[in-house]
Structure formats: structure tokens, C-alpha cells
Length: 138
Image (cartoon, rainbow, N blue to C red; front, side, top):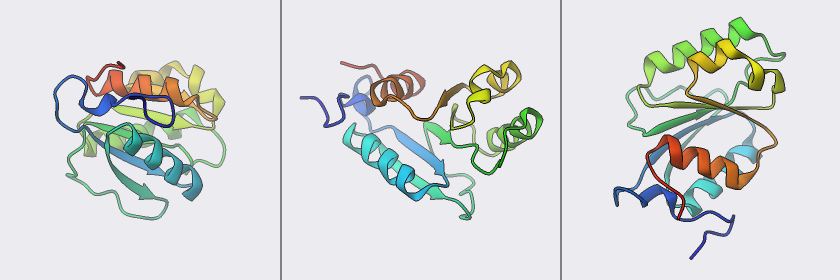
């Protein structure tokens, strides 16, 4: 049976264990939507909103982070932010951003595990998350 957003239960597809996602999103509506999409796909989701402290040491199989703290896309500032996040969290990092210049930034791509832009295609997002967490779409 497919999840309401067109995905399958990608969180447990390979290992049988629930994959944990740490989602950093400043827009409350987008954060709630991401939580709903990922929970419907079988993931465990910790959502951190703008202004909340990053829970260092929180176990996660994947970190999904917005670049929203940047008012205008600045490659070097984005890279510094991604490096700081990677230093505090060991899992792969998917940058999900409305800054379309980020999608073509080869330096940012070297620092983040993957970069996707908003608006996003739900099936493509779930496929990317499944790939990055070691799951597969059924």
C-alpha cells in the first residue's frame, strides 16, 4: 500500500528499522508538510524550527536542512553553514532550499550530500531520502 503522498514505506524498506530524520526548517507550514510527508512514509521525524537550538548529538540517519537563514544566497556563507552543521551531525546532509542558485553551486554540492530546491516534487524528495538513508522505493 502506498502512502498518501505517493511514496511507499521507504523508512523500513531495507533494514526493517525506522529511519530517523532531523529536519531543520524555518517556515512552519513547510516544516509541518515535511513532517507529514516523512511520517506517512514511515520515518521518525524530529523537526527543528527557526530559532530553536540544534540538538547536538540527536541520533539521525539523515539531516535535512533549509538554507533559509540566508536572506540572499551567498555561496561561501552557505558552505560555512553546511560545514558547521556537518561538524555537529555525522549523518548525510540533504540541503532543501528555495535558493535556486544552490542547486548549481558545485562548492556547496561538495559539502552537502545532496541539494534539492523548493518547490519540490514529493516523489523525488522521498526517493532522494530513501537513497540517502539506505532504503529503496518499493
